[in-house]
Image (tube, rainbow, N blue to C red):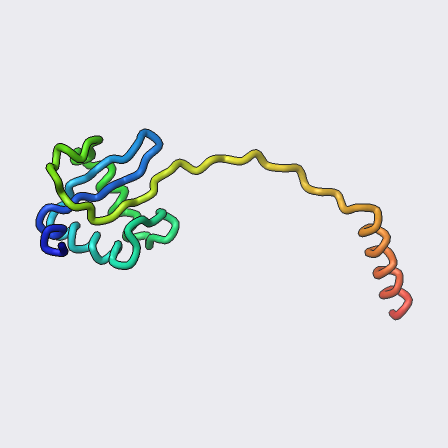
Length: 115
């Protein structure tokens, strides 16, 4: 299986439009096998900066295709989850409850009396 992956493996990238497949070079396949040696699917957050740059370069290259059938029955080296980050609206800061305000004021009064 390792030899098949080294000779003709493809990288799967999960995007919002569906999975995309990339045919990396031989040296890139060796490095990708090392990256995916323990886990078949990885999110970009767990990758090092060097690994993220590699994936960005692969995704920006012209070898990015939608169908795995273009590669025949090539084995998948690994899968990268490239889902977009969903932006959440910023919540206003929470106001402390009146109980918390009372506890803080009592604590401050106690500290002032000790001084």
